[in-house]
Each structure stands twice: as structure tokens, then as C-alpha cells.
Amino acid sequence: PRAGDGVAIPTGIEALDRALSDGGVPSGRLTEIQGARGSGRTTLVRHLVQTAVEARRWVAVIDGSRTLAPREWAEAGDSGRLWMIRPHGADRSAWCADILLRSGAFSLVVLDSPPPLSRQVVVRLTRLAKEHDVALVIVGDSPVIGSAVRLRVERKSKSKDQRPKSIGTAE
Image (cartoon, rainbow, N blue to C red; front, side):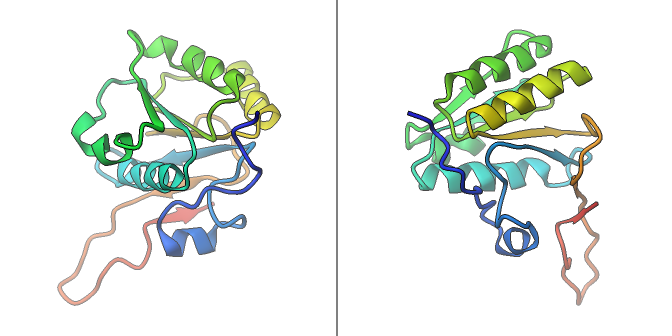
């Protein structure tokens, strides 16, 4: 049985879900989330993962840089539907994503902080995501490949009487 159901996975952030054309991260596609360290990109991904797990979807997160704090992911992990993969080397991240996508067992595969990926690898991962109807999310500091839509996460500085109006910009 295929894990995906062709429906977008909401991010768990209502304003962002309204801004995205499918109402969340689309299945069968590659979505890039980029931003500098401390910009909130990992928090956004945690919201996405938590929403997917609450919808009884299986999720795999590949921690390419081995920097994700397990304690911060514990709530989503309690469901038993979250796999955290920490390859021995960052260079094995894409290989792990390839295996997970080919399995067809996951609705969402997140590749966090991979090393630079060749166009050939990105095309292959995107094809596998489409074939198996999996939402593939790549998270990093810089773009992986020229995307049609890219979400760049930035932290807005707060003034005393104004809250940030958005969590990011879509290009």
C-alpha cells in the first residue's frame, strides 16, 4: 500500500497553509525550506512533522548534520510513527532518502542539512517522491536546486508594539 494519499500535509501554521496553493506541503513533490541558523526553519519542520504524525501519517527525518536535538522531537516520536535517521556521515543522507522514498512506507520524508547535492541526485529523489506520492522536504541554509517555489524563513525583529507579520517569504 502507498503511504501518501495525494493530499498536501498542513504545516500546522494556519497563515502559511493558507498561503500555500495546496493548503500545505504537497505530496509527490520536492519542497525546499531554507534559512539561516536560528531563523525558525527547524521549528517550522517540527510543526509539519507533528501535524503529519497527528494525522496518523508515517514520517522519516534524516538528520544529515546530526544536530537535531532528540528532546525537541519527543512529542512527535511518542506516536511511534516518526523515524529519526542519523547517518554515520552527511554524505549518506541522500542515500538514506533514496531508500526511504523507494520503500513507499512514508507520507513525509525530511532531509535536514544535507551536503551539496548534485542535480542528478535531486532529480532522482524528486522522481521517487512523485512515484510513491511522498512529500519530500529538504531543509538547509542555501537552495539545493532552482525551485519553482522556495520558502525562505527569516526571523523578523520585533519592535515593542509590533509583532512579526510573516514567518517567511515565498519566491
